[in-house]
Length: 138
Length: 480
Image (cartoon, rainbow over all chains, first blue to last red; front, side, top):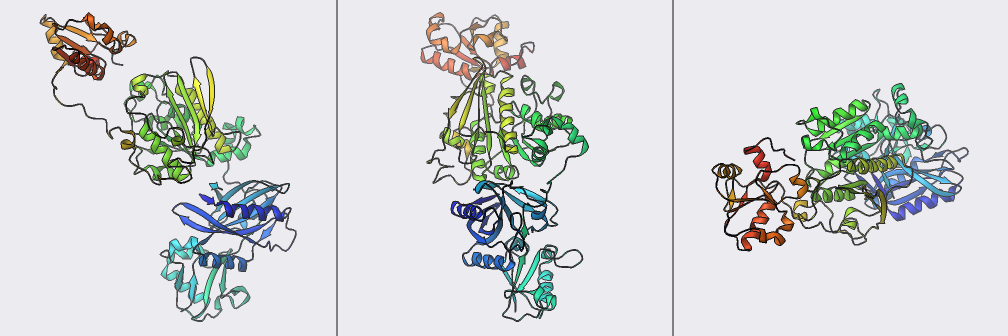
């Protein structure tokens, strides 16, 4: 289960709404308490996908590395990745799955007409052939 | 030595360390040294063929080794090696089906699949769902049958009881031939007979503060079908702590209640009932009785709410306590709010782990064993019979209710219900020897105390009541 604290959640929604109609992406920093992941800080990152970004995103590993460093400095961990799906539901698409990794929670925010609609969190398996839905609380 | 930073999710395979110093002159050597030291890391970083997994990028002091010398990139003692996944995605492409229905399942669930609100997506959600039933009794019976039929993929049941004849009037998951079997086995058989495509987890235990978190943790939704206050508070607190929705139901005689606790910003059971009632004030179904159909109605309201939560459709029964009265056939709703001062789900909770719920509810952990031997003022049913046979003169008083008297009675017994005793005490003569009895001996003990206080000196309580009479004296007297 992943719980996103209010401030981090608001930052994620703001980022997703402001990049509409393009997809946004970012990192989630926080702590892991037993089976519960708690997101304390959201770090908006640049969508580095080279083509149209309405239905694609790409994270620069360097950016992720920076986010990881920021987390370590703050006594936290990089525990998840978020991105948005403009004008469609928060499913985990084939593209999401194939370009994911099994190490993090993947939170997808559905933004419809520029406003946040709903969100889901996914845990991809090691071979990126399937993703389990994770309980998401925000 | 160069240092390798370990990403959070991999630290569990590296003694929980966040960085590890390894020897090696190149990236390849350093990674080999790392995975030699922590072999479990290997399969997370490398494929079976020994290549770095597609999503794994390796950086030496902020430079991607793909743009340097790859594996052969030299590393200095002061270098930091980072492992960074490459991540991308997007809504483009079809949603990956998390599981699939086979041909048999598609046929079986066809009436779900053609409802737009359920459809294939919803049915797959049900298939992937994990629901825990606390109790395989009155509420658990309809819940188990219908959730199994609906295709909830994994259903856990917590129960340690055995089916007996008094269960059959309402616990429709068990049949007459199941009497004496474990309820878990009987329920699982019935559910798998309806739907062999599901998995059933049997938890043969009494839910306790020690095991509750471990048992509940695996499930998406918990459904409370318990009949006692300690377990109800335990389930509530565990659900709040684990943030699992608690689909609640309770029944008594002709009335029932249902709601969802611990979901979203809604209330929990303690917001509604901060304190348990004094022990003994609220009778259980065993003591007070229950219309056999009632748990069907309430259990299926719980099942409906559980399925709605799993599908993510409709308006959940959160913040509303649904009250059902079978006699007037009316539903009412009470609005419930989360109590910001609630000790478990409030803004500043004081209960942050499970407590001793038997102590909290003022009830003993185990039902007290009946004391062995006769206490002062008690008489064994066999002695009562012997006195009757010897023609001894005494008065036998049955202090049960008239509807119980209609079920069974002991010849010669005079019916004076406990509640009527004060106003009918003049019917008794304190010169007579008096024996009082009830169903199992508890109410008649109160009657005996009352009579003694009223000045009756020769009062005896028949130990074990009419149930013991049936066991020891006359098996033709039915037990209830």
